[in-house]
Amino acid sequence: MAADNLVVIVVDQLSHWATDPAQRAPLDLPNLDALAAQGTTFTRAYATSPVCSENRLALLTGQYPFTLGTNTLHPGVGSMGTMLEAAGWDTGYIGKWHLSPSASPSGFVASADRPGWRYFAGSEGVPHKYVTGFAFKQDDPTPVSTSPWEPTWNTTEAVRFLQAPRSKPFALVVNYGPPHPTVDTNFIPNTFTPKQIILRPNVEDRDKAAAKQRYVKYMSLAVTTDTELGVLLSEIDLATTFVLLTADHGDMLMSHGLGTNQQKRRPWEEAAHIPLILAGPGIAAGVQDSGMMSTVDILPSMFHLLGVTVPAEVEGSPWPYFSPVYFGHDDPDKSWGGERWRGLVDGYCKYAVSESGALETLFDLVSDPYELTNLALNPVYAPTLNSMRAAVQARAHTLGDPFVFPTH
Image (cartoon, rainbow, N blue to C red; front, side, top):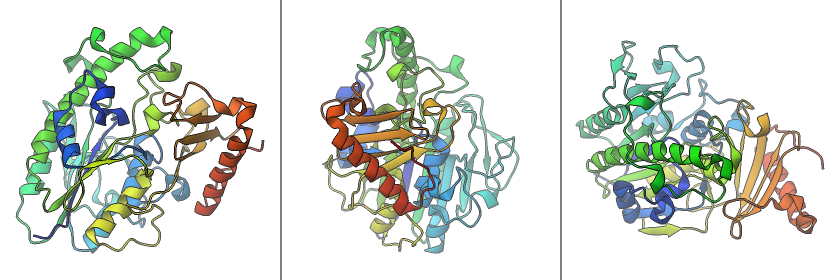
């Protein structure tokens, strides 16, 4: 078979530093590391919008949720499933969907709400229940238990799809919930102890004890997903299949004084900077740390590798073309300052502003990787600040983003 298959693995809430053994100690993720060793790790990848539905919408459509004006997949909007199915691919989707315009209370995802995916095994996926959860297969609204462990159930369904006989290429998306927190917390064994945890320097003193407890649960959940990765990857031939691993967004892990309900939807590195690993035929082993990528760039990049025509409505740029990352969030619920916001990462210069202008940040990520010193407050950096203000507004104008920037 030609080298034209695709598997996209999305690990919900996996922070970018998980791909760096030095930063994640004592967390060991041998299967993620094995994938990275066989492919390219993009160290400068960002979530187009650091929250699950909006970012998954960008992943599957190659369009910005801001210009689509929604965080759900509406009928008629082209997506990875519809495009690849039309191009002759056998398509499958496993796990959390969370994109239906009118989600069923049961979590059932009707075929009309997931167009293009011939095989489906999953649910809306909210709330996250890894021990006591249910999912659905195809068009049957009868719930199927995913106990005793949803990630294992997802892997089993993914392997079932991969092993099915077929005469055409395939494209599969697999979504793993952990390390996103679960409501089944009493069932999750802790692999680590607070004494092992090395906190990031931007965790405030008052939060350190609570942050260590969150790290323990987060890392313990990450280990279980890595185990599933090992099973899944053992079924994939990288000589004929491209594998891309990324995340919906990261986790603040209580950095910057944020509470337990404020761990995403923010421009901070912990939430918006995500892992991105690509392996497969012709992909060199190594690290790409100079080019910027955003979730919205994934669809055109994969289509470029597969030799599939990228539709005109796609707004992302195909790899290996890199551009400054434009990102933001539109739902003020639990968001940065309770507002919509936009930002731009150009090289290692990072800017973000809230809709009212009450929050505005500028960071040099080389000298200040933990974003401890807001240069927007320093008059010395006024020229850089004004340049980034102009650049982010120009990008919004080019995209047709209706966001109204504050006047300064």
